[in-house]
Image (cartoon, rainbow, N blue to C red; front, top):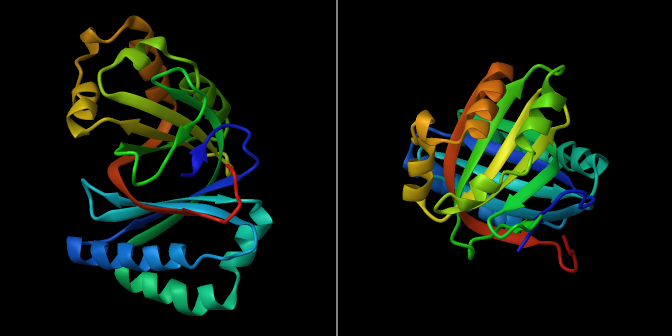
Length: 228
């Protein structure tokens, strides 16, 4: 399975697709599976497909060798004339976020986490918009090790990624199940430790937008011979 870890030498790209209903979501996921199963693009390293749970959407977590390889793929004739029109008909919006992994924290204290359909993870992806002048401070705040978080029931890991355009931070989190995540997400402020309350308050003050969704990982494939 692909691995998320800092300084892994990969460009990490989130392809996020929103659609209108479960039927279009199923069609979208089938199309993405086919693309990933046959991927053989120069510089492509891995793709992990996520099916949205709360909303009809999909997310593709992609690792590339470099930004030049990514640009070559999306500037290609087939992508422009076939892939783009097909997905335009299926989706209401498509986002491509270029990022790099800054930090990973896991329940057992590791600095890397695997992603794939066999992991049984309940995945949460949070997109946090910010002013470019605040991104460094927001990343530093969210990337701090948090021993309390490791003790929260059902927590598995969270990874902080910095958007290369300078105005986005992504939190990619893994949980045991939906119930564990909801218990944490709805935990009253007075039940959280003071450092967590302060972190949340400081973080919210720097956000210009926040969007999240929950996902199941449904398919993953890596280039033969690639070790993340």
